[in-house]
Length: 472
Image 1 (cartoon, rainbow, N blue to C red):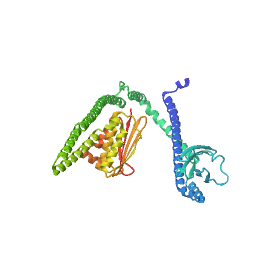
Image 2 (spheres, helix red, strand yellow; image 1 turned 60 degrees about the vertical axis):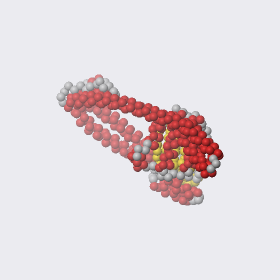
Image 3 (cartoon, rainbow, N blue to C red; image 1 turned 30 degrees about the vertical axis):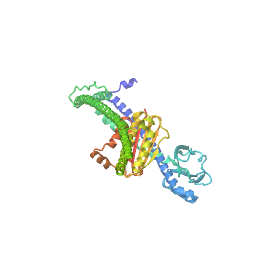
Image 4 (cartoon, rainbow, N blue to C red; image 1 turned 90 degrees about the horizontal axis):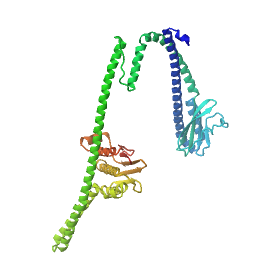
C-alpha cells in the first residue's frame, strides 16, 4: 500500500470519488432492483387476486347451472387479457378440478394440483411456487364463500423480470456515465471546500444527536466562514426555541392534568349530590307523600259528604301519581340496583322503563350475568347509556335502539345504535351554538377513564356511539 502514499492528493481524491461512485452505483442498482422486484411481487399478487375475484364472481352462476363451456370460455378469455397469467384453475365445492386453461385438457403439469391446496375455502390465500419457468404467484379465492368452490390463478414473473432487467441495465449505464462526468467536476470543486464543509457537517451531526455545545469554527471571511457563523447563530436560536417549547409543554401538561382533576372532582361531586337528592326524595319526600295519602284515605272513609269523599279520593290518586314520579326521578338520579347488583342489571331495568315510557323498542346484547367492574367505570358507562338514549328521544325519530356490551380481560366495550335520522356535521355545530354539552360530556367521561369515545352514522342511517374503557 506504499504506492498510495506516493500519489498526489488530487489522485487520491479522484480514486476515492471513483470508488465511491462505483460503490454507490452498485448500492443504488441493488436498491432499485429490490424495490422493483418487491413492487412486481405485490403487483402480481394484487392482479392475481383481482383476476381470481372477477372469475369467481362471474363463474358462480355458471358452475351452479353446470355450464362448463361458459366457465372454460370465461377463463380462456381472461387469460388472453393478461400475458402474465400462467394458468387459471376452477374447482367445485368438492375440491375437484372443474376447468383449467392448460392446452391439453387431459395432461396437466406434474404436481400442479397439489402444489397449493387451500387450508379452508372460505378465505383467499396466497403463496409463491417454484417452477422451471421461475416463480409463480398462486392465488386462491373462494366462490360464494367456498360454497360453490374456489379459483386458483397463477401469475408468472417472467415478463416482469425481463422488463426489470432491461431497465436496470440502462439505469446502471446512465448512472456510470453521470458518475464519471461528475467525478471530474467534483474533484476541482472539492479541493477548496471539502475540509471546512466536512467539519461543518460533523458539527451538524453532533448537534442533531443532542450535543448542543458544539460550534462550527469559521476563521475565514469567505462563504464557508459566513456559513459557519450563520450555523452557530442558528444553533443558539434552536437552543432557545427548544427551551421555550419545553417550558410551554410542561405548563400545558400541568394545565391538562389540573383540568382532568377538576372535571373528575366535578363529576364525583355531581354523583354524590345526585345520590343525596335521590336518598332524600326516596326517604323523606316519599314518606311524607305516603303519610299524606294515608291521611286522605282515612278522611275519605270518615267523610259524611259524598262530594268531599270523592274529592279526597281524587286528591289521594294525584298524590299517588306524584309519589310514583318522585320515585322514578330518584331511581333515575341514582338507581339503587346499580350499587347492589351492577351495571348489566341496571341497564336492563333502565331499558325496560325506557320502553314503557317512550314506546321505543330496546334490544339488549349484554352478558347474562353481572361481572365485577370498578365503580367509576360502571358509573361512567351507565351515565353514557342514559345520555345517549335521552338524545335519541330528543333529537331523532328512532323506533329501535340496540345496546351491546362486551367485556374481555382488559377492556369493556359499549355500543349504542339506533335507526333514526343519523348525525351530521351540521348537528354538531348546532349543538355547539345552543350550548348543548351532552355529546361532549359523554366524551369527557370516557376519556377521564382512559378510554375512547366515537360517534358516527351507522349502516342503517342512524347514529352509533362506541365507547371502550379499560377495566384496570
